[in-house]
Image (cartoon, rainbow, N blue to C red; front, side, top):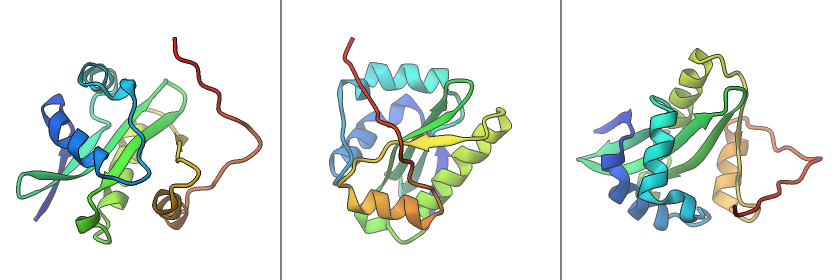
Length: 138
């Protein structure tokens, strides 16, 4: 049986293992244990894991800046896909954002991530155009 519960920093090792096994999911220094711990503390109650027999098989990292929500690392182990786990994780995070007064959410998906782009399109998310994302390490 799958159980969805709030993500904690104690889940970190299993999450990193899952994320490293997901094609199209890019990790960076921002995904260090220390940074994820700070993110979870700033965005309490918005990120979730899905467990099956005490093993994490799905994750969603979610937060907001007070104006817009952002989702990172929605991931479902390939053996557990097509069970609506991703949909449930997204829905619970969006509901929590809405309770905090956040009515719009964004996700960044790598351009050639066929599975990820297909998922977001299939659940009604709109691909944006007309702007570029710029990044800089500080």
